[in-house]
Amino acid sequence: MNLHPYILSFFFVLMSCGLAMCQQFPAAAGGRAFAMGNAVAALSDTWAVFNNVAGLASQERVEVAVAAQQPYGLGALQTAYLGASAPLPWGGAVGVSAMRFGDKLFNEQAFGLAFAHKISMVSVGVKASYFQRAVQDPTGVTSRTQGAFLFEIGGIARLLPTLYWGMHAYNLGQARMVSDYREEYLPVVLKTGIGYHPTESLWLNIEAEKDTEQPARVKAGFEYRLAKPFYVRTGVQTQPFVNTFGIGIRPKKLSVDYGLMIHNPLGLVHHISVSYAFRQ
Image 1 (cartoon, rainbow, N blue to C red):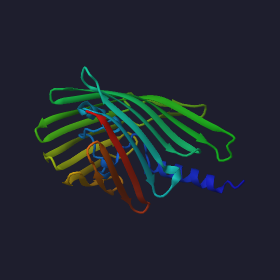
Image 2: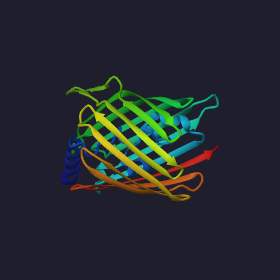
Image 3: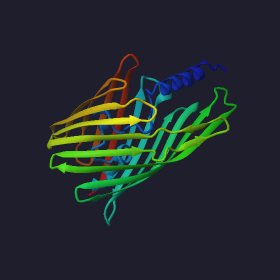
Image 4: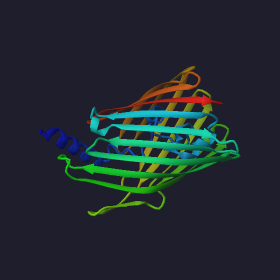
């Protein structure tokens, strides 16, 4: 049996994750968010179940969404997302999420349940998730699986008719995973940002994010509706510096969004998502 492909795959996964170039959870999900530089703290859509749970409070329809991400042409770094949200008859909304990153040698999975509610101009949300990581040696003889429960909270406030402020805290309490070999604390991620929505056709977002294991980052995003149902988007991130671009098509109940990240020298990251709204 030729083990070289498996060894190389495992090496690239560890190298990339170690450099924080492919951190998949809690990375933003959805082609719209990805194309806007992941500046998502003030956005409200069905992908808020991943990005800022408070954004679910504005959901008025039952929606299901799927997405896939392909970094640098490496199958070992693929990520798949599945989310759904629904408004509640007595107010607020619920959401569920599932994510899987990696391959059979190294993978991360997360499953979450969220609730959000809107009171006047303020939306708040909470979410509980179970995060699991599995590592298998290239021979398939041994494997190690670790898991932990995570909690997060978010808020979005409408400060002015055209101005929104959002905040999100991931992994409150800093959950840890314990194995026979070591104890690992998962990172706490805090982000806050402003969304400016001067017209129905234009969104401008800027936010700051701090991961306990990484330098602080600044992200900015732009979305413009050319004409119904076509959208163009772009964004930028620091630490590391990357550019993002994307397009979206949103005819009535269906949304198809594509995002592209350009990173030098590693290459391109593709992210595509599809969502469907079932009823009003």
